[in-house]
Image: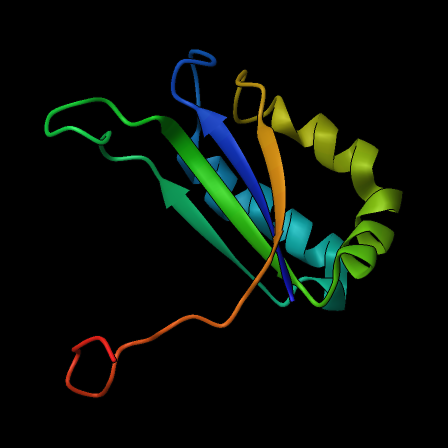
Length: 114
């Protein structure tokens, strides 16, 4: 499984409509990708590394897909439509990253790390 992440830097623009992103843009992506989108997550930046500092990113999303090839094949035909929708919620140039999801350590039933 892979995770395609899109980050919107806090210093990269002047507007970001979180409501539109959550209720319109990400559902559009999920609909267009179909089974290539196993799930997605949305992050809203709260703070930076140091207490009281501004967040590094205004927002981010993470789309999980069975493989990079599956994601690219599903995304390709809709790239122009999805890119055109970006201007409806932000003027920030996004930064994209892909990663292979590796199994990590979780928490036990008690909430204590194993």
